[in-house]
Image 1 (cartoon, one colour):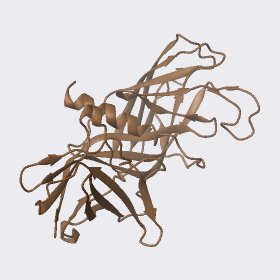
Image 2 (cartoon, one colour; image 1 turned 30 degrees about the vertical axis):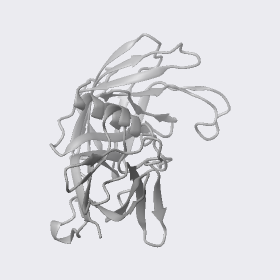
Image 3 (cartoon, helix red, strand yellow; image 1 turned 45 degrees about the vertical axis):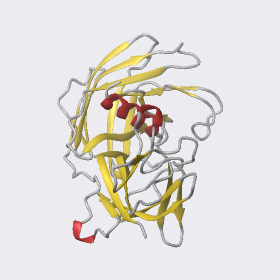
Image 4 (tube, one colour; image 1 turned 180 degrees about the vertical axis):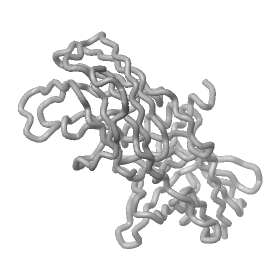
Length: 312
């Protein structure tokens, strides 16, 4: 399997946990209608350009020894513990902006040992050490006193005479609010399984243009009616591997997530079960115009990012 496919598979597995929108209020719309035909089922909108809120870099001069800065996150090796069975590398994540967060159950970094996509530990003698597969490497904790995050990576035991260790991180994710963007997608008044609807909807989110070209409907139309939205692949800056906005219509209880293996496809189910939205007591069948809200974006910054620590 090519490396890029391996990376994509891992990234999308991790993104599944962060692409559900939290409850949010309806923001003020920034869109302006275009001259598209009013009778068309596919509505097109022109957006007022807004500045990107992608986290900016911390100045290099502020980067302490044993740390690496990725946008508004400083990652430092807090300490290294060596035993006969493993080497524990405790990382500290200092977030320099209240905009940047990490969702419960997720992490700034991750691993997929099966696809050889994981942090690597190396010493100054040219030896490399892999993560221990059975260990809980992804647990991230927040220290309320220091206001920082901690995550411990457990590697195979290093050589006893190693005096310098380097952690290499293949990718780092940054989850941040965006300036609230709203756009509309008209799914028609009676979407049915097996139908395909052509779209021509363009939205600018965090400085990046997303062009929706097609909607497909599936399921049985009774218990489920999944809708799949197709976008043209976005051209991202070189240092960003993936950008994942959180799409949804919170008033109708519709929240989109990316389809496995395809960053230009998002899906949701138009049959909303009881309990998903406040006040519902039976299945609700959503159709017509979706008022899509985007208020969060996850950026995956391309590594490798290397952090070195001298040992006593």
